[in-house]
Image 1 (cartoon, one colour):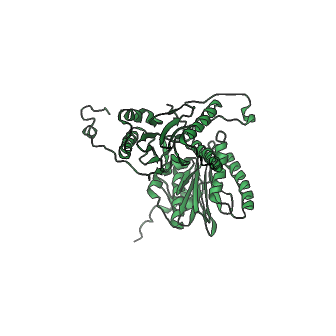
Image 2 (cartoon, chains in turn brown, orange; image 1 turned 60 degrees about the vertical axis):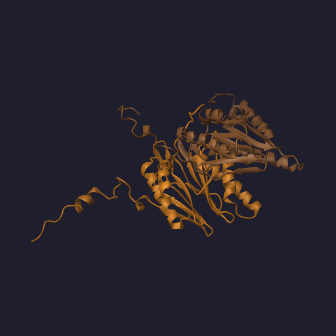
Image 3 (cartoon, helix red, strand yellow; image 1 turned 120 degrees about the vertical axis):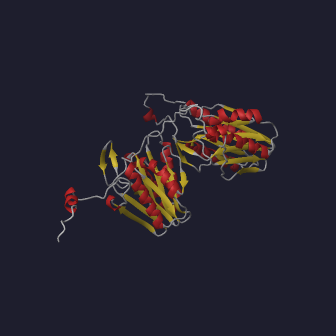
Length: 241
Length: 233
């Protein structure tokens, strides 16, 4: 994705900017609706180009009482979005009227922010996943850096689009139990670990239900390397890979 | 899906910040280069923001200087208003504010380190783009590429002040050995509840690494020293 628009209308004087490329980035987020709410998984990596530079970045955060926000893409922009949402939730609380912003509202707010930035050629370089539960209704949606926004029963960003989606399409069904949901997410995360260069083996799974938000402690997945075919792959054809 | 993320351009310098049991140790090399020329071989890249908070600067010398000047100015006023020393977190956040909002124009990676009475010793890494990451240790600058493996191996929680400083000096020294954009002397700044200590390690006081030789005054010394005297019977 390139936003390299050479504009020569005295931008520097008018104090406008164009974000052209990301620096510290997070990779995929995978999320599904399940029986009691929404489950969201992400690894804890912050890549700097091809270097796996930061290994303790939390890319899934609770928003208010009813929502979870996961982000892939530029981490500094994610941190800025968290500040915007902080202010949003704060103002919501200040009304002190018993109402609180639910996932639908937060998703809508984020969609407006992302789309409007896109229109100014100065995007927040993220793909966001918004999940939550309010009044018994589960909600799961995502917004991209160009403002494309939709809801679904299961979503994935980045590499997850290509690797996790097919698995989810095949194996997701309504009313998954917590255990089945976690196993399904772990299946996706393991594949991403094998096949996504920017993935690291340290992940968190967050859960949101009517009761509230829980983000798991960081943990690592076991990987399997003992296929016979892996042991001596070039035996039959020297010089192959 | 665009995976061609323009990886950031190399930045001259090696800077390091490390927490230990009681405070932080900041370290840096001293080379400022203009292209291939070493403009300053004894620069001081560890800059004071307040009595208890310092910042290590890397990348563009001008950008890092102007950012730290602004933040020192803001922190000065903040300290007066607050009536007590600013915290490391606030200092890091002010740097972040400038770094993030001017991300298109600035090219500087910074490490903020210090000690305050609320959180003790803290290190915040602020790479290109303006992300803030609180870390037990941070490395930045072009020389840091050579230190990821070293720190993965050598880093331990709860080191003593002496161990932490030794680690920093060793690390900067290793980076200098391999990074053309880093060189000169190793400077360290130790910050804890008792105050701030500056140290200076010139090149000849550092350990020798692979394929480095003991410095001599002249070849003549070597020639004159060699050659055993003929035996006298």
